[in-house]
Image 1: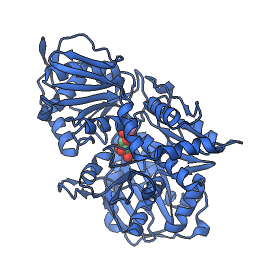
Image 2: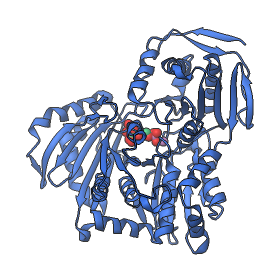
Image 3: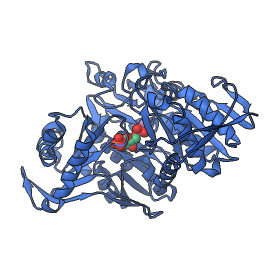
Image 4: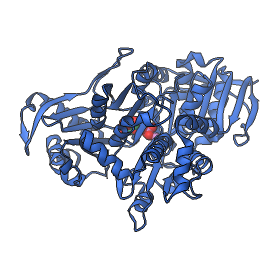
Length: 544
Ligand code: VG1
Ligand code: CO
């Protein structure tokens, strides 16, 4: 066995963001860049030595190369066994499922999620701990610290492993198992949902659906589960073959980027249900006939109806939502008499709450929903949950939402993203808002009176860790909110996200255009933060 000890020097930009380390492919291709981060991860996680590692990614450009490097480094670092998805493919929720099922010491997921892929686009790497979830901040911080002092890394000299053939082989003293990427995940889904009922929905009437895998990782999963196991009409899953560049598109399931299915729900003969997932399979967008379900509403509806699916026969223990997510879920929790936790943005903050069973369902406004079945958000899980509900309720998607709003009220919601903004200007904008905190409460703008203004901080109720500066909240006396955050997943400049919500309890006023309802709050948000003057932008890049 030929283990090399390669000398290296630290890079100063390897601090993981909201979800791992995301950079341009070109950055990762620099000599030692990927290797440094992987060695820092192994060094910070001594339990991996002699243990099992799960490895896979969303299939984007550089996925296969990175996997071969990581395998050789894992072998050199004394990992006993690595489980790899066939072809290097594992969706993020499938990786989480496999870490848990085989009780491994963790996993490495290669993905930049919804960011475009290709030689000039983005790549990413993330470490998940042994509960299957993204590493908590104390672990990512330890990895980062190690990356700043690293002087060498270990790598085995060996040939590439054949990633396409399922089976077991050896790499030095490490066992490599190339496994079916889909099977374990599909088995889990079958236990959570009423597959016969969904099968019946597809085969007993006129119900038609379309799932857009956006040329990303979910294709093989959706084909197997939706078409083969549940019997949806062949062709119900589109763009199902993962491509290294996602077909040149932006694998982001929202109204701006998943236009193919938006049209299929708005045409002359619309499908009853449509959904899409992102690059790594953890996000979802849900559409009905001429109808868009906001992710915040989706979370609330799933929570309110959880007792209708086999996974939650006696309901759920609690709910959590990220801070910018609308308060629709809070209203459900209140009525169910359960707790609703408000966490910072990023799935890693749900881990402790799920592990301690304080919550069973959680979600984010950024098209992420999930439960205690894994420790990642799960796009296909949300789609199957919706299908199970539709099979039980026998109602169109729009009707499900309208009935929900009647009971709980409607939280109109919109998000504005300003991408690629100058970093210093974005920081200054946030500071300008912070400087005004004291003066804002009590002030009135366009009929809205500010009740509070603060910078969100969170103390984890389980381990007591404190995360501060997690986004600026401006709350109004009628329950409306404006939230400002800088993204932690971008690779160019800064992305300013502005999240807005307004509560409407009156059923007579629950069917208005979101853009019309939100217009005054949007104007207040722009004015308060001086967005135009400070960023030079007269309009956002994306509205969701
Ligand atoms: C974004 C979303 C956040 C999500 C994160 C990872 O982060 O806002 O809710 O958890 O992406 O999702 P940010 O810091 O850019 O706002 V994914 O699908 O990229 O793993
Ligand atoms: Co994702």
